[in-house]
Image (cartoon, rainbow, N blue to C red; front, top):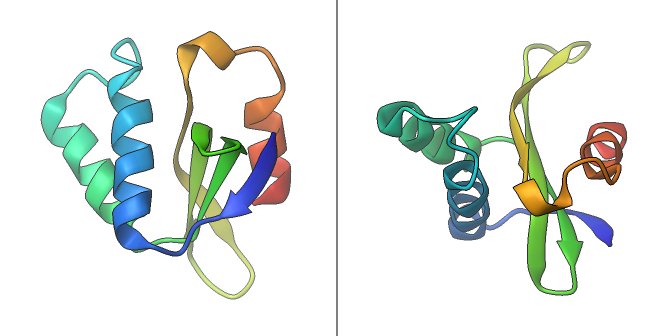
Length: 92
């Protein structure tokens, strides 16, 4: 697994859509999912990749040159509890 920064907006949308839609217990409101997908395409975005498969992602919202926050993040359910979220957080 490798953490990569993703710059392509369409790739960001594809990754976030696939992962967020796989997490209905956390992201169950379709309108909210679409907002996360579209907004994260314009923000700094990192993905945990296993070759060409995205296992998880994190999107950061920069508030100033000194502060940022996690806008949205998710990891495919079958990869939970394997340190992927922690690796994404540390990279971001």
